[in-house]
Length: 181
Image 1 (cartoon, rainbow, N blue to C red):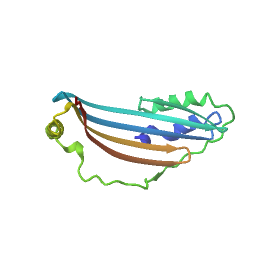
Image 2 (image 1 turned 90 degrees about the vertical axis):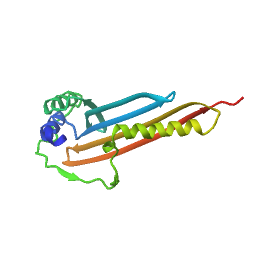
Image 3 (image 1 turned 135 degrees about the vertical axis):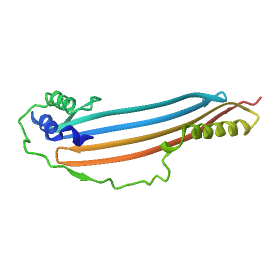
Image 4 (image 1 turned 60 degrees about the vertical axis):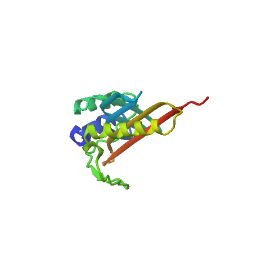
């Protein structure tokens, strides 16, 4: 994603007023959630959050901004805005050649939860709900949930480093409230 946004131009603009270092951080997170309450499906949510943050370091200080406009023009505009905060002389005008860096940690996902049909996910949450209610006669409330999240990030900087990572999270829970006289 970041490499499609003309980062060389973005970083030149970010550093045009004396910045010493700049980095861009892209994040795209998708989430699917199922909530069970009162012995029924309460809500099902799905969403995507995306954006790019830009940080400029200058004279021991930093300035940061972000945009959800994922275009080269949007990121260049952000770089121009942030660079106005930076006072000083132009410190970097050379072209940047990006070198991809691999993350040191890699988790193996055996079965992608996104590939599981919604019907099956609902069955799992329903089974947890049923088991929770059956656990004790004193149970007065059960909330059960299933949350799957896929987070993709990319980081690039004015030194030419480019890294990307992807993490998948799955949360499954049952919360019980009991009451006894």
